[in-house]
Picture 1 (cartoon, rainbow, N blue to C red):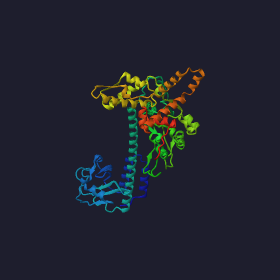
Picture 2: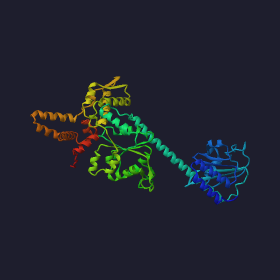
Picture 3: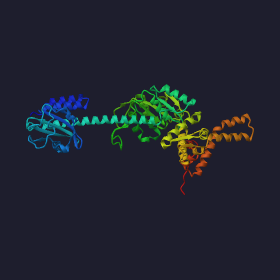
Picture 4: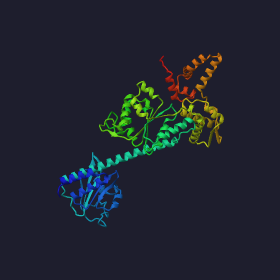
Length: 530
């Protein structure tokens, strides 16, 4: 028996480089084995702990590919798995042959024949087996050890490469399915519908319909809680990328030292704790939409890297020299005035102009005349399903109570109020088939703007203002408003012993909104040690 030739090795290397699928690689591997070693059957099998699975074969019936050989039922396979090098079986070995009756050109039991198995190890891990059978007894006895070593190495490498590629492909498919499922779940959760009939909302819907089908970057403005994320989801759903992923990133929640890794990914060993390769948000959004919420919170260093990704459609994972190209549409949202941020040097002007190709403003709830009632009905139906209530409704007086509030926390605050009101109403009416939400269930909604208007009105009653005085009062309205807000928040904070959560509940506000207002009014709590 001759050693494997250099030409055979070269041919296999060339053919392997041409192969685009695992089946091609396996088929060419078996061709090379049979050209080197004369045999009637050769099979490549993968190892799965308690069984082996045929991946490719020559000389056996095709139905063999559908078989799964349990090791405890097939002692020859078990012996090969336990061996560390080639294992030859005696021609008259008493161990049953798993291929009895499976030779493609022969019916019935196998006669005395030659059988050999090679355990395929890669990096000290058993990946599979290569078995060879010949109807000529003892034909494998004099094969040079070098030939067997080369075949073993080639087979193990080929199998390892194929398994790695398959694993990567499956992981990519899985990641895509997960992202798509999360995107679809988010759209189902929020209904994918913007609720409202006010002129502000009608204008918003028109703007969305205009820009959705394009690939333009969209900058979504709006106060906290107005529904900027829902606008982004609607834009994605109405776009030509709606079958691709919608990837959400909260820029305000990204730690400064991990921003680049989160957005662009990293390779194993790029930094302490990087124990494996990780895809960034840009790559996950490939073929779809990337939504960057709270874009105004990104530090300048990160802004420059995002600018490059948007300009050139290219990213560079941390620790990787190679540049990767991505195809994503960018949607961003902020409650900041980015023009002012640019003037103050806190936001890059070139990035601002890249992002604001088509700006959209989402109106505050207080400016959406007539929408509070519609949104209340939507949230009531939503919480009714969550609580398992047969019927839940708001009384006319409750709706009027809600409509008279100016909702500084916007739609999000309204949803929270409705949820709390539903719980209170259920507790009051445990046996009612129809649970009614009353004003008392909604809590005492402190309407700051209305209270301030009342204070100003009372001030006018103290004296008959001249036109000049009236003009001065109008010009100072913002100052008076802020003073009232500051005094009310400080007083409530003091009564609640500095507890922000309790203060927010007392003021019927979203805590995040309260913190934002307090920061603007320079209200802080100083703790002292006594």
